[in-house]
Image 1: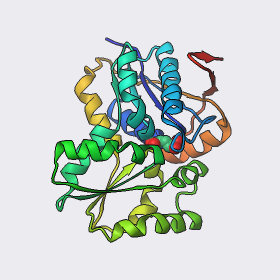
Image 2: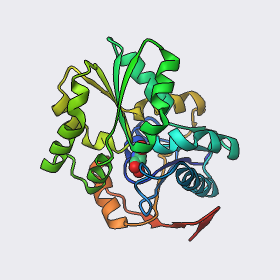
Image 3: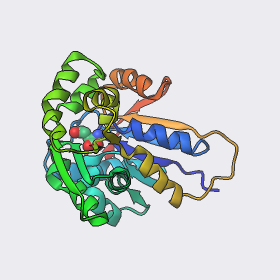
Length: 268
Ligand code: DGL
């Protein structure tokens, strides 16, 4: 029986949407989550910076004993997945390919919208992954950078959020899309407001469930009835993280540890 934890990281609170799904599906696994709240957002940062941060985050999780790493961040998955898979001694899962697969399965008319951070959209990771699965799909992409601070602020249905959604998504509504990929793990926090704006005919896809399915294929069943433990780490702003986390997870985080990550390794 492998008692080592599943390691999950994101730039902040967004990856908790993935954590929630994994926790639900794997009640007996220990899970360790790291949110890089000192350095969020990753979306506008350069490729090399995102790769550096991702390596530091993953190494930290491995130092805590992680047996597998889930990159619960589309920007890191789009940029650093291959580097992490080469460098790390444990399996590494990203969210893009599972998300692309869900989108292709969901779309009837093959017109798929993809929204994400500037980094994710610039990388064309979703377009590439979707086209590989079905090259008849027509993909319309749009970066929505302001959604990340709105989600980090906990403004899931604030007036400012509704205006921002309208500003970003109006052009996509004219493309006859039937599926919209929430290509950033922060965006499901705004899901209700986004769905209200785009209407019920457009299916919203987020990769939390899809990446959990993938994890299910890889992880052997843990033969224990001992409920898994959660360990939460951030690099800054513990109070705010706890507040938003309690809304996303419907539970209070009682123990949250702040760590400082540095170049090549981490400093406590
Ligand atoms: N939640 C992350 C993603 O899925 C990153 C958002 C950001 O830090 O800009 O892309």
